[in-house]
Picture 1 (spheres, one colour):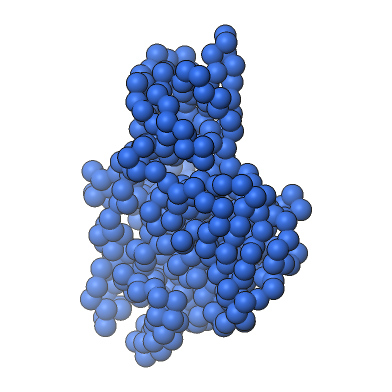
Picture 2: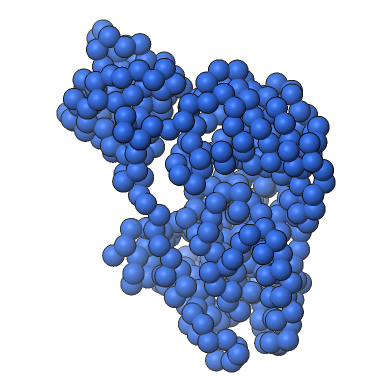
Length: 407
């Protein structure tokens, strides 16, 4: 069986994200024993009909408001492999959670309600998927049952959506008419949607490819902390990608200092090597480790720079002004920075170009920017090394923006 594939489900609020997830879990027999009975009782207590969306709404607050507040991860499997579903909120005020969830995904499903049509969040979430470099995409054209299985309405919305996606350079892998509520074209083909002969949601997911595993990539080990244990200086952190072994020659960035790993330290365990995902420590003779350093394989080094180009999604009511003081966070690095230039300022839902060489970004706007840092920072193009190509911006002690490094 293939390794787990992570995918995110996005789209406008009430377009069926949670319902689709509930249906996927139910149709693949992935619910815990007694779960549906508990959901029925809860719905009855709240005076509501039982719906598949309730499977994910574990929090009482979510049940009472009828909206998904946080990203939730859940699991199911097919004959081919296991899946991790990341459910991303649709409400505008939950964009931070949506970006956090989507940044972990290798593929995506974009939900579109055929009855309501393309909405502001549909476009905004589609743009975020491009911002995060997600290329494997299913568009689930939902609620076919509510439009009486009309091919004419389906084609109308499809034409409008494809024109928008083309404008942001997204080519969906599949575009599938479904009814998440009734389970049509989710796990089983629908006999009511006669004009469509393509795969179901599950069949389409099974065609997607796993991205290169973190373990197979180059060594990226950001130093989280430095400890002194019995006189031994240990650089501790989590290996983001690659492997490291005792005796290996590596490079410490941004100093560009060659060192030899003396020991690999694991909690309550004797070890000589470690790989991606493990939280470990390493030691080396005659070198002073510091938080924020990045230990990398000498054959394939990430970039060290003080200026780089990025796409930024601003998500704070406090306006971002050019040249104001910010904190850039990349992995364990925290470095003062400024937006040196806002080359383009874009409305993230309409994709209207608001201006070029702008002096500010406002809430939910996207900027193509040049960032300059106070001191050298270890970075990489997002599409090459995600771990070093993703960042957040802090303004007034609050995470206010996020983005990816493109050059």
